[in-house]
Length: 139
Image 1 (cartoon, rainbow, N blue to C red):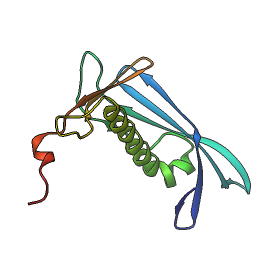
Image 2 (spheres, rainbow, N blue to C red):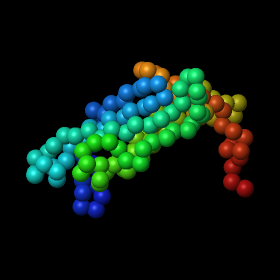
Image 3 (cartoon, helix red, strand yellow):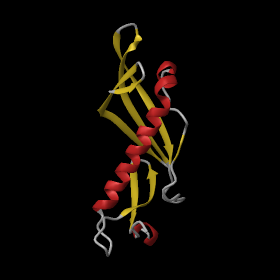
Image 4 (cartoon, one colour):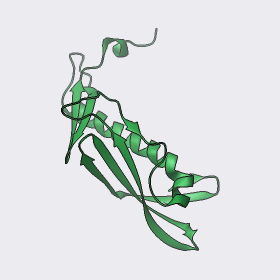
């Protein structure tokens, strides 16, 4: 349940879906809200398109998103930016997880994502070792 002042939005994370196109990740968040349809819980979807690299035109970890999600206007007005932030965080979390499954660096630290790109039906995460600057602790 997302809350913002007196507004609430239920998000069915288990029913969320993703579509992978050439250079595009589309994430659909299934939501429900009883404040829009006069007290009845209405189910709606917010869609967040994000541009990433392609196999032929890699873009590292650059991910560009629209400022608000797509969907019903009343829902987007209140929750559009939050949906984009949540989907961006989810995409980065997936990339970090997938990269960590690829192995460890010479210091036994999990690999991190160095790039991500999408093609029709596929998301590719390119793992890399953490850069030396990032390995240094606080001084």
